[in-house]
Image 1 (cartoon, rainbow, N blue to C red):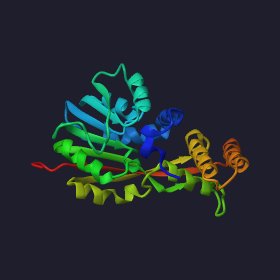
Image 2: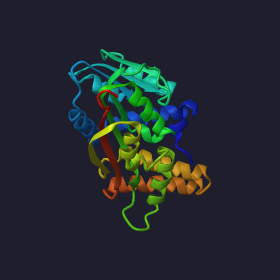
Image 3: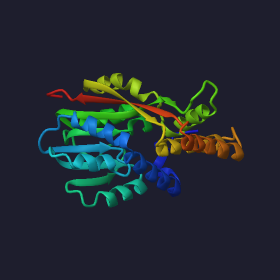
Image 4: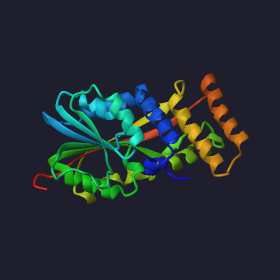
Length: 270
């Protein structure tokens, strides 16, 4: 079972369309909106900032950044034409917002092109995170900012008991959701290796109980992954999905994802 996002451009278009819906569902979740608003407010964007979002998907973060008063231009890049089509349609009326098909490991920009670069739940999906950060360093202006917000997916859980079968589903989901589930824990060292100075580190915890819509998509992906791998049959996969929905209906559902957020800066003169 491999992270579908790592090779999303080669995925079946129906899979990409499904992911597009999940990305917009997650972006509309009140907790996720609060996380985004909180860390964006803490970023000292210079006036007239030109911002790059790497791995923009359907574009919810790029749209949010383009609404900030200090920001004059936002460029969102993604390797998936399907996701970019959604980003272009949803961002059509946002001044200063554009999107481009590109590989994060070979950015099509000159050195010192951006005041700030954002990676929102994208770095953990890209094979070669060190190459991505090296490219981010190259295109950042001296004293330019790098903002990373990503899942600490190694801590993802759907369990409410020691022997809860939904925990196996959560582990399977993580394998198809993240190329490197330990990425956040490695991030300080990766940032320093790339040449950045780490300014600040924060953590966020996303929990789902009564409103389980987004976490149920994770449950579904984990059950589907186990079935596709031949670990369980179709009947058990369907039963695990139904178990999650019954818990949600009865107030017994719980899901947890931890996130890490780091702000880094490119040194003056670099």
